[in-house]
View 1 (tube, rainbow, N blue to C red):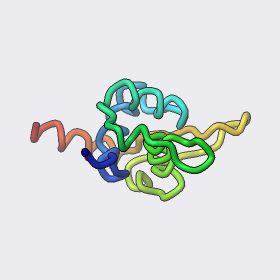
View 2: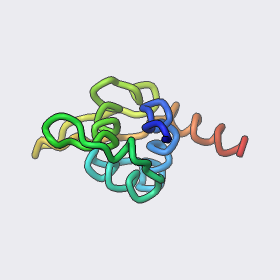
View 3: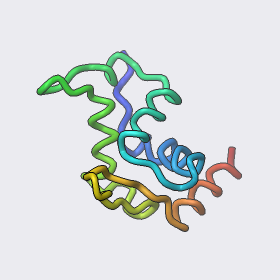
Length: 101
């Protein structure tokens, strides 16, 4: 059985989503886009406590664990949503990875 996707493995895909959406997305939009773009395995779709899906929890952890702190900033909007914004370091990291591909 394949292992669940980790936060570290989500850094590049998350930055790709941010860049493709003009540099800004809410955490909800990020979750939706990553679900569309990535192949989720059984371990990712597994339910955790309180009915949460493991993958969506892992994406949320990118903010709560500050995994993207070096590459993107997050703020709360007036309506309480978390808005992520790619920064210069994030763009440079993304560009360097794309050159290697």
